[in-house]
Length: 110
Length: 113
Image (tube, rainbow over all chains, first blue to last red; front, side, top):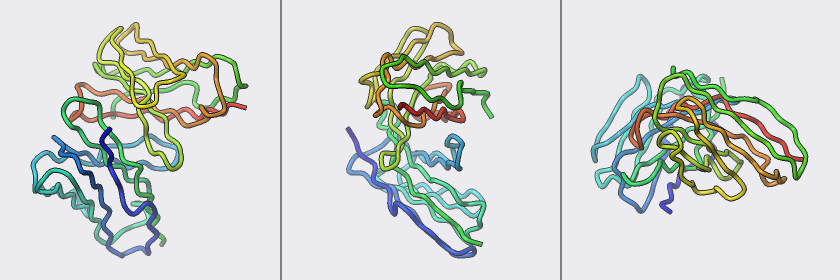
């Protein structure tokens, strides 16, 4: 079973700060997705990255897929309280259903 | 947003009783999934379906069974609930496998006493 390690597990920051969270594995993936989950709700897809080295931007969020397609990062610029939630990465090896990491729980304090 | 609902949203039951959770989607998605989410474990796949009457086991399938008699409905059954099955259960659907976006339901919070 491939493992996805997400770090940090918990992150509490002040509004306006920048942050980066990571998703790492020893396996190579066909694609990787990032989801955000708010309390009491199901996860919602933010982005899918497919190509090694790919960078995608979604407003203040920047997603990067590692060159070797084994890792990914999510960078948030000028975090806002609305960014609070659980950030999950999920990876696809091509042959099995998505594997999810345990998530990074982000709290942005106003 | 894909229309995906779960019922019930909350349930309290006793050890040893059978429990069935229902997932309903209106998007004609081929794939449906059942996950459980627990602190320290993240989202873990229980079972999934790749078509009507086509199902397969996930990472934590012991103690659970599923059925899919219609495209829109995917049922998860705990034949004899145990306290270790206390969790939040999420259903998801997707038009295709893996790379396709999974659309999640709002979750069912199950407490087994």
